[in-house]
Amino acid sequence: MDILKLINEAEKDIKGEFAKIDDTCLFYSSKVLEAFQKHNVSEACFAETTGYGYNDLGRETIEKIFATIFNAEDALVRNQFVSGSHALSKTLFALLRPNDLLLSITGLPYDTLHEVIGIKENASSLASFGVKYAQIDLVADDFDYEKVEKYLKNNKVKVIEIQRSKGYSTRKSLTIEKLEKVIKLIKSIDRDVIVMVDNCYCEFVEKVNPIEVGADIVVGSLIKNLGGGIAPNGAYVVGNKALIDLVGESLTLPGEGREVGPTLGVNKALLEGLFFAPSVVASALKTSVLTSCVMQRLGYKTNPLYNEERADIVVDIQFGDPDKLIKFVQGIQSGSPVDAHALPIPWDMPGYDDQVIMAAGCFTQGSSIELSCDGPIRKPFIAYMQGGLTYEYGKLGLIKALEFMQNEK
Ligand SMILES: *Cc1c(COP(=O)(O)O)cnc(C)c1O
Image 1 (cartoon, rainbow, N blue to C red):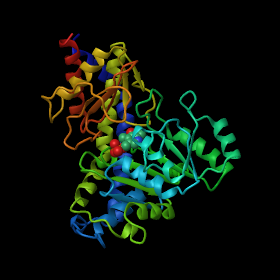
Image 2: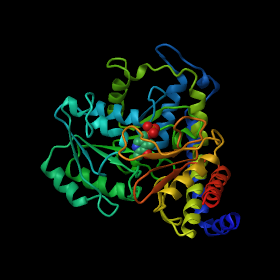
Image 3: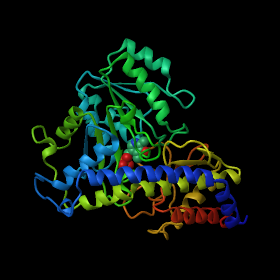
Image 4: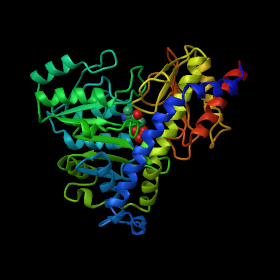
């Protein structure tokens, strides 16, 4: 196999996709730049606060910028959120009270939420506080509109959770179009139910965001898309002001809420990360499209296909063989800028039933806007790949993975 020839040919096939990605990149670059100007970003915003973190100009400006970009009433963007999972947990704990009912309409939620909700036993879960949980699975990669309608007519639901990106499942990630349809249905039955969207990996991929199609509160990670590979940690929550205030009270303490939270010098990185985010997301998308196209040409099933509409930056490749999956992931690691010499092997990761292999040669621990790849060692042996801070590094990583598969046969 001539890998470079394969890549060159694939790049001809994907020109049309790249043009669409460039168009979206310009759209969001303009949105980000306008928001920076509207809210008067200045050098003073880069100053740090310590201790309680009262009157942090940078923090307040960042939150206004996020609200503007999402067309939301308000935003909470904090380095006190460890990552997206922590923000999702804090948001659920902020919105739900004993005897309230939480409903997921995208099947089993992301793995890190199992102990938060109490799907998996944990003495500190929502379930331990008496929060009830129900779940409606997707059908044919879309919402089960009939079941959702019937359930809402027969039960008083407090919060509906919608996870857009597929996680470690084989389903498709959910586009804004589908989201809009289901939120319209939900609100036509019960105006008061809170629609919460897990937006991880989906930011800046489509031109419309969940708030604009009726979501009440949206959560995402800063070690993914909107951190632009520069934010060292953190997460954002955007949405209705009253709900954001509740999340603030839950994150710090009732009474002080959003007024406290020292930024410890992180403001400049958050602003710079957001500034780069449109083009970093575009690079990750291009890497994802190239990977789909190349792996399809090699006869592997990929999700999504190279020319399929994308809702997020993740591409999964079905290897059908554990050795090929392992080689591919090891190759991605060997094409990374950090720890390229390390050879990942499958291990028993806490919280997972199967062994998992991970490539994460990243500057920021766990950052998956950087080129990263992982896969549970179970049939049909799928690798989930995402990221690439630049398209060129993404492409070089893919070339290394292909070389690894070829040489180690
Ligand atoms: C990554 C991810 C999360 C968790 O985000 P972290 O920042 O890794 O904690 C939650 N939900 C989905 C769908 C994700 O992809």
